[in-house]
Length: 120
Image (cartoon, rainbow, N blue to C red; front, side, top):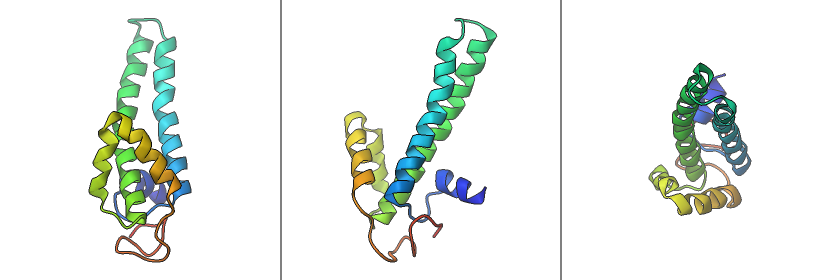
């Protein structure tokens, strides 16, 4: 469980391309499921209110998780995590996601950790 918390909520350490992509996909599913269920619920119903609340909670948690994953991915590229702010620019964020998924990390230890997919 501690690895899960580290992966999605900590900004220390490094993650590989595969861990970044798979983590990002899991975050997207966690965010999409309550939104999907909300669209199926009758408008104004208690069920609709429940799913909209769950979506907001999932959205806020996934927002931080996306930033934490991106920071660790940038650390694997030996770049500062501050560059992760580009994820908030609508069109640029798609390009940034692709870049972070495709470019290989720095081999061996760097200033952000000894190896990818482990806390610093």
